[in-house]
Length: 478
Ligand SMILES: [Zn+2]
Image 1 (cartoon, rainbow, N blue to C red):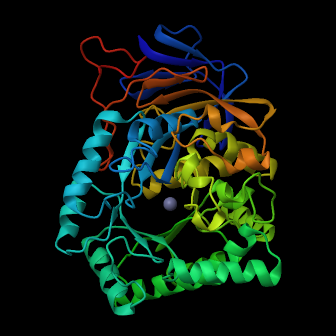
Image 2 (image 1 turned 45 degrees about the vertical axis):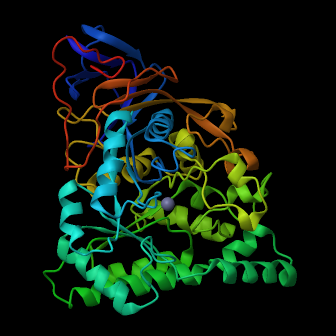
């Protein structure tokens, strides 16, 4: 008997690269049959009539906060938001408070996730102040080291080539991937002055001025500098295979910088783009500009179009949410005082399916960018990001609906403000059902699952078989 059958839908066939009619059978956390007959014996029968059945979306860039910032988000609220938005695996960033750049903090962070997660969760760490911690962090199972070039989490001077170059070399030697927020070291004071000057002299809106303060040139130069230091750290040796991932690519200039490096070192760099850098722009009108404040900033429309095209042609490998929750009180303040970032996960799959679909992206490209490429990046390509027999049963069922603006007050995230709502951006898809590792987490749009240990911290982790009467509804044994 199957645990779950998803019937009457069309699933994305990874070989034919298109939707194919077929029923999906799930047992013990895995897909065990495709095209199985109607009415197969099952515990839960999910109706997917008129819907598309895709691999669960995998998000390589999300902020879960928690620790001292649990008022902004927790693993529980953030992973519920993920499931709500069709995401079955996410990897969280280390700019927590305290920063997740020491083994003890990372252990605490993982312990919280272990008991509270509704989807699969992986981790990055920040660069540790003590280099000897790198192998320990690797042993703990982090998926990479995140470097914020604008401001180091641990107070190191990233403006100094010797300091940044040494850090890069240590990470490369430890065999961990590098994830980079490119830019140049800024001070808040200098940013503020430059911003006010631009508002005054050039009659720009706050978002346009902010895009100039954190300019596309800084983004592109940051990429070139970081990749140059990585190359130097490898001493030009062909055997050295650094894996550098460029976060939230936002501009045509950044894309050019990546292309230049790719031509020289094929396979050494990957990149992600967010929905907001594809679908929103600093030239759009928002109800409150501060809500749309984010880093990298929203750029002019021509840049947003370039980012979308780069995702479509594969120059930018994957899409990621950069879900960055803050409270409404923190965001609804004068523009300069507002923190950067906003929640994305609750509306993630609907935004991407709608935004990329409307701009002409075939489903093939969407699945590649949102499921397959992130799975490959995380070393999970054989088991996740794909619907096939033997793969993990991480599945999202989505249905086309009448256009509607996603409402932030319906979010599962604790952060209930959205630039999409403020700009009146409509979505034409809704997430109907979500299965995570064979556990039903979302049924007809409602959360029905339980939190469990869904950590990816040691590479691929398969849920143990459901022994002793656990149910696939409600997340098995709790
Ligand atoms: Zn981020």
